[in-house]
Picture (cartoon, one colour):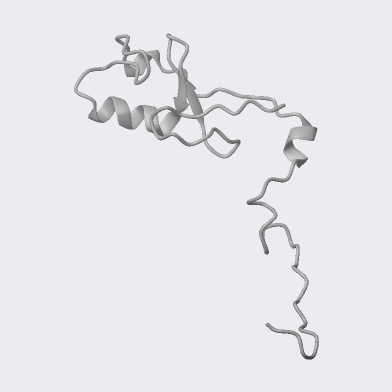
Length: 99
């Protein structure tokens, strides 16, 4: 079963398309979200536990191995028309039936 973790700054789930970063308290975030947090927050604290941290404490990239089985699972979004080349059957009304 895949880990369904999300960034507590933007609330989006982590995926293999965006860089994930961590800080020394162990919390993880999207790298871009964390950089923006440090650039705009009045205090340099962890967005989740509020421990004092700074940009120099950022582990810039984390890597997760995703099992082939997890990569091949299809979700509702990927099953939409055009996402993976599936076509929906056409509706052909039968003569005399209400549409």
